[in-house]
Image 1 (cartoon, rainbow over the protein chains, first blue to last red):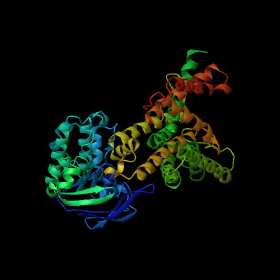
Image 2 (cartoon, chains in turn red, purple):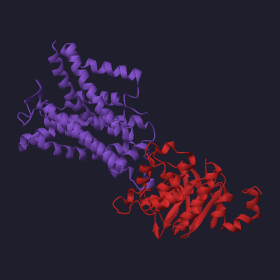
Image 3 (cartoon, chains in turn red, cyan):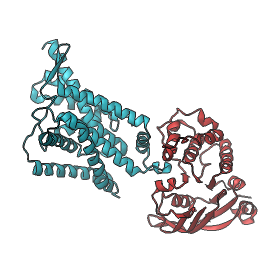
Image 4 (cartoon, rainbow over the protein chains, first blue to last red):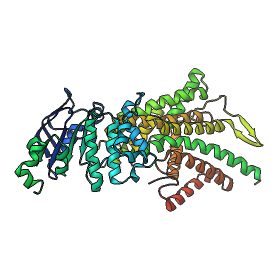
Length: 234
Length: 292
C-alpha cells in the first residue's frame, strides 16, 4: 500500500534520514522505533508532505505522492497525527472534529466516522463543547487521532502518540490503534516506547541515525538479543 | 448647546461609526487570519469608490445597485493581491515582518500613483443618487440617508460575516487557519486558498463601504489615506484581529469623533479619536476586545 524507497530528507542542509526504504501493506500495523534523533519523525513528515524529500520516492496505492502539497496527500487518504498534535486550540472539540471531515463536507454521511470515534474514546463525546486547549494531554491525543479519523484515511500515521500522557491513557491509546486497524485501516506508528509498540505491531523497523538498522516481524524483533539489550533495557 | 444638538450629532456619529466599522472589518479579518497588516487597505477603499463612480458615470448605475458589483470586484482584487504579492512576501526567510509591511505599503503607493495617472487627481463625486443629499427624520432627529443606509449595510454585513464564520465550513476553515495555518493541511485544507479567500472577503467588505461612501464623499486618489488611518485606530481599539471588535471599535470612534466635534473647534475634530486610542493603548494594549 505504502512504499517508501530510498528517501533522503534534510533540514537546513543537515541530513535527517538518508536512503530510507520501508513498505507498509494494507491492514498492517507497522512500528518504526529508534532513539531520539534517529529520524523517525522526519520519515513520517516526508511521507505526509510536511517535509519535502530531497531524493527517493513515496508511492501510495500506486500513486507517487512525494512532492505533492501536504493537503493533497491528506486528500489522497493518508492522515497524519504529528508529535505536537496540532489541534486548533481555541476551537471546540466539536469544531475540531468537524474540520476533520472538511474534505467530505458535501457528503450526507460526513459524520459517519464519529461512531468509531466515540466508540474508541467515549470521553470525547462528553467534551464536545469544550475548547480543545482545555483537554488533558491524553484527551488531546485522542482528539488528534479522532480528527485524523474524520478525514477517512486508508493509512493513519501516528508520531509518538504516547508522549506526555499518563500511563493509563497510553494503554487506552494503544488499544485504540488495534481497534482502528480492525476497522479496516492501516497504521504506521512511530514510538519511543518500543515494548508497547511491538506488542500491537505486525512488523517493525528500527532506525538509527537516519538509516534503517533492522526490519522484521514485531515478534522477531522483540526477541532479538541486540534489540533487547540496546532498546528494551533487558 | 441644546440636548437636541447633542442627540443629533451623536446619532450621526453612531451612523458614521458603523461605517467606520465596516471599513475596518477587512483589515481586522486579514490581520487576524495571518498577522499581516494591509497597508493598502485605504487604497482598496479608494478603488471601490472610483469603481462606484465610474459605474455611475458610464452606466448611470446607482451606487446602491453598484455595491454588490463593487464588492465582488474588490473580492477578486483582494484575492489577486494575496496570490500575486503577499504570498511571495510571506516567503521571505529573513525580516518577514518588514517585507510584508513594505510590500503592502509599496502596493498602496503604486495603486495611488496609478489612480493619479489614469483617473487624474481631480475630485469626483456621484452627483445624484437615490440616497445622496437626502435626510430622514426619526423622532425629530435628522439622519442623512447615505449614512443611515451605510449603517444598515454595515450591520447586515457584520451579521452575514458572523453567520459565515460560525456556521459554514469555509468559515470554520478560516478560524482554523487563523489558529494554526500550519495545521490545516492535516485535514486537507489548502491554507493558500483560505488566505486568498480571507483577502478577497476583507477587500469585499471595504468595497461595500466604498460604494456607500461614494454617495456622500469626494473621490480622489488620496481619499483612502485618512480613512485608512481611522481604520487602523478602529482595529487597534477593537482589538487587533478581532473582526467583531472592529464593529464595536467603529462605533466608539464614530461617537468620540462626534463628541469631539461638539466640544472643540472643527479643525480639532480628529483629536478625540487619537486621545481615546492612546488611552486604550496605555490601559489595555491588546485593545478592548482583543484576546491576546
